[in-house]
Structures are given as structure tokens and as C-alpha cells.
Amino acid sequence: MSSPAGANLFTGFTRLCKGLAVVLVSGYIAVQIFPSILTYVALIPARTIPFGWNLLTAGYIEQTVHGVLSSTIGLLFIGKLLEPIWGSREFMKFIFIVNFLTSLCVFITTISLYYVTMQENYLYTPLSGFSGVLSGLLVGVKQIIPDQELSPLKIKAKWLPSMMLLLAIFVSLFTLEPATYLPILIFGTYTGWIYLRYFQRKQETGFKGDPSDEFSFSTFFPEFLRPVIDPIASIFHRMLCGRSDASNEARGGYTAGNTTLPGSDPIEATRRRERGARALEERLAAERLIGTGGAKSKTDEPERDASENV
Picture 1 (cartoon, rainbow, N blue to C red):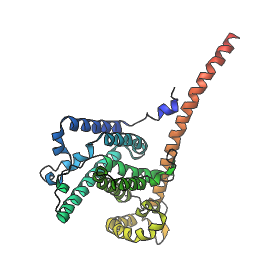
Picture 2 (cartoon, rainbow, N blue to C red):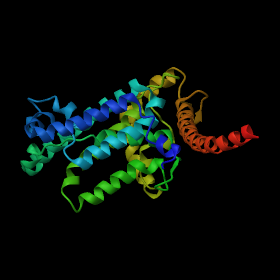
Picture 3 (cartoon, helix red, strand yellow):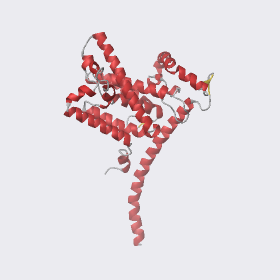
């Protein structure tokens, strides 16, 4: 018999995530029944100019069984954590933006590779899958509960995006199929981080992004590589965040000199991570209470019967 706590692990999925899961499964079934529709819904760079909608549809089309299973399961469990914290509207907005930007970056990359190598397989290979959005959602987990240790894996949540990319790169060295997913995973991770780092608006403060050091680009890399990564990342930071820093300073600023002001966005980022960790702890505590409550109720019934007989 399964325990109530174990059963509760597979409940509580949000309505939005269940709807998106149905879309992923339906897309996979449709492609298997009517393979010709892959030409219109997958990202085929040579046909993107007349069929521009595939920049949006490609992310929701899985071509393999393991692809649809991993994407569906990942969406349900990660969405169960992030959507209550972000809100349904922001969660859907994140998925839409990351999906579109990932497809756009993959399209530009494949076109560039074609002109460099003149190999037509870059133009006609159908690329699709939800893995780009899924990798972006892992960046959201890294932001919300970076120091939460995942018991089955014994690693901290902040390393999930990096471990996923490292595993994908390793597997792509030996098989061809993961190589088609690798650009999607890389751009999904990067665009997810870009959006959360610079553009996601906080309803509590009105500020955009998360400029905290704990969420910098170099935190995706081991400690010994960060002195090399930080100077390069600072160039892109000035390009993407220069104006927003100026506008935020005009409204109260992030910093005055080297001192962080009260109410600044780094403090709000810390509070958001604390809320995420607290929400996860409350959910785990509720699951434990359900399990112990069920066990107590079963043992209490004989005791009540005995007292009644007396």
C-alpha cells in the first residue's frame, strides 16, 4: 500500500501545467499519426520565413516518447513549485518568452552554421521540443531555492541547470540525437536567465530583474572559473542593464557608492528566495503531516472501540 505522503507527491499540480501537459501529449500524438504536419509546426530553418509561426509552435512539439515524458513530468513538478510563487500569468509569460527567444536563437544559429559550412542538413533538420523552456524553468528553481538540497540527487538546486547542460554535452559526444537538442537546451537556459536577471518585474517593488551576486552568470560555473567568467559577463551586463540601473537609481537606486540601500532589489531577491524555500518546506511538512495523520487515525479507531466496549 502506498503512503498518503507518497500519493500527495503526485497531486497538487496546477491547472495551467496540466493544460500545457495535455498540449505536449496531444502534439506528440498528432505528429505520430500525421507525420506531414511536422513540416509546418517544427522549426525547419529553410521554411521559417514563409512559416514564421513555427518559432512559436516548435517548442510544444515533441518527436520522441522520452522527450514527451521528460517534458511533461518536468513541467508538472517544476510548475508545482514555481507557479504559486510567480503567479499563473507570470508563469505563462515566462514560458512564452523563453520558448520564442529559444526558437529565434536556434534559427539564427542554424542559418549561420549553414553559411559557414554550406551543409544543407542545418536548413532541413526539424528541430522542436519543450526542453528549452524546461531548462529555463530550472533556472527559476535555481533562483528561488538555490541552497535547497534535493534528497534523491544529493545536490543543491542551484546546480540543476549546469548539471543538465553538462550531461547533455557529454551525451552529445557519443550520439547524434541529443546534438539536435543541445542548442535548444543552451539557449533555453541562457534566455531564461536573461529574463529573470534583467526583465522580470516584481509586483512588490516595481523593480525589474534580480541583480544579486548569488544569481550572476558566473554562478553557473565552478568557483575556480568565475574570475575568468566575471569580466566577460560584465560586458553583457552593461549592455543589457545600463539603462535599467540608471532608472532604478533615479527611483531610489540599488546602491549608493558600494552600500546597498534598504528596499533595494537585491534584498527583495533574498526575500523571494526565502519565500520559495519556506513554501517548499511548508509543502513537505504538509505531506509528512498527511502521512502521520493517516497512520494515527488508523491506530486510534481500535482504541475508541475498546473504550466504548468498556
